[in-house]
Image (cartoon, rainbow, N blue to C red; front, side, top):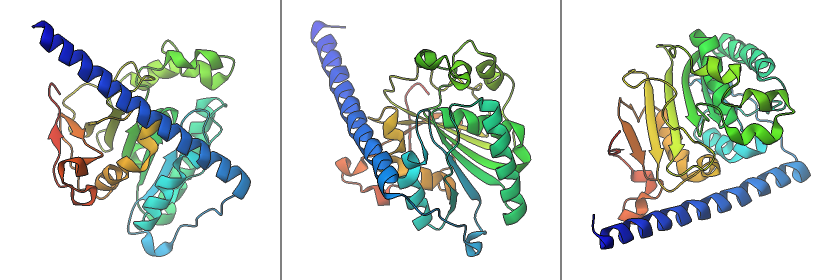
Length: 277
C-alpha cells in the first residue's frame, strides 16, 4: 500500500470517528434532556388498546444507569404506528436474575391477555436481559431486537462492581458465560444491531455462531452506543416489527441517513450486505 493510500485511509478513519463521536454527543444530550423532562414534567403511562391486539405486545428495556425516559421517543413512535408498547423501567441495580423473574411474569401475562407472543426491544444491558428472557420462555416470545448488546460482557462495568448487576456484566462472570453458552431458541427471531463505531462494545456479532436462520445481524453506519436509541433507527425497528426486513445469514448494513444519496428514509426499500459479513 502506497503512502498516499495509507494517508487517505487514516483520514477516512479520523473522519468516521469524528462523525460517530459527534452523533454520540448529540444523542447523549438528547437522552439527558429526556430524563430531565421526565423527572420534572412526569408522564402518564400509556394503556394497551384492545383494538390493537392484532399485533404483538412490545416490551422495551433500557440500558444500564438509565430509566424509561431513554426509550420514550421510541415508545411514542411505535405508539403512533399502532403498536402496544410496555416501556416500564426495571431496577438495573438489582440482581439481573431477579429482574428476569419479574419481567418473565409480565411477558407471560401479556401472552395470556392478548393471545400473541411478545416482541422485546432491549438496549445495552436491556438487550442482554431480552436475550435471557427469550431463552427462558421462548414459547411466549416472537422477536428480540438487541441494540448495542455487550455480547461477552463489558470491562466498563468495573466502576460499578459493588453492585450485583455490575459484577454480572463483567466478562468473566457466570451470568455472561451462561448467556453466551448454548444455542438460541429456534422459534424466536433475534435481530442483533450494532453501531459501526461503539467504544463500549469490544466484541460484535459474536454472541451466537453464524448460519442460524433465526439470527440476523445489522450494522448501522455512523452511530455508536447511545445513537442506537435515537430517531435515526426508528424506521429500521419498524421494518423489523412489521416484517419488512427478513434478514439472513449475512451482516446487513443500514444507513440511517439515506437522504444523503437522494433517497428519503420513508422511501427506503433496499438493504446492503456489509463486506466481509
